[in-house]
Structures are given as structure tokens and as C-alpha cells.
Image (cartoon, rainbow, N blue to C red; front, top):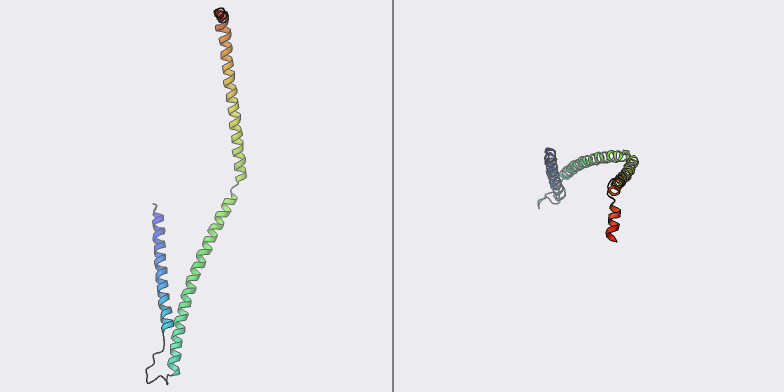
Length: 156
């Protein structure tokens, strides 16, 4: 493994832990926000002051505001990550499109034709060599020793 892959894994693990902690914190804020009820004693049920209710509502709104800010911050980071990924993918696509595959295909076809031409020349050379050897054998060996007449005499 390369050191970069370990760094990437540690970075991802850290991001995952941070995300889990943020989610747990947000969940606690939501529970506090929705479970918060004004505490009323039995003697003061009828006479709750508007100031304390306003204060409780203000606290609730502050919690909601902080929760919305944290969500907005998180979404902003996600949006930035998506934009960066889009840029990388676009650059990769542009790079792949800039590769001229038509010229590579033409070069490959030209190489295949050259290989076939060399194959034909090699076969022609082998045939020419064989014919030359047969001619030399015919003219030097068979005629001098008159092998054909010996074979014919033997057959008859």
C-alpha cells in the first residue's frame, strides 16, 4: 500500500467520525428543541407569565437557528465537494476526448499492413531459396551421376 492510501483512509475515517459526531449533536439539538416544554407547577398553571413564555420561545428559536446554521454549513461543504468532483470528472473527460484515437487506429492499420507485406516477402524468399537449392542439386548432382537413368533402370 502506498502512504497516500493510508492518508486517504485516515482522512475518510476522520471525516466519517466528524460526520457521526455532527449528526449526534444535531439529533440532541432536535430532541432538546422538540421535547422542551414549559415546566408548570400545579399552583401556577393559570398564571404563566408572557415573559417566561417569550424567553422559552426565544431559546427555542436560537436552538433552531444554530441547527439551521450547522445544516447550512454542512450542505455548503457537500456542495463544494460535488463541484470539485465535477471539475475533476470534466477534466478527465476532456483529456480522454483530446486523445486522438483515429490517428492511433490509422497507425495500427499501417503496422498490420507492413507486417503482412513482410510476411509475403519472407515466404517469397523461402520459396526462391528452395527452388535455387533444387536447381543446384539437379544440375550438379543428378546430371553428373545420372541418377534418373539409374532409377529408371532399377524400375525396369
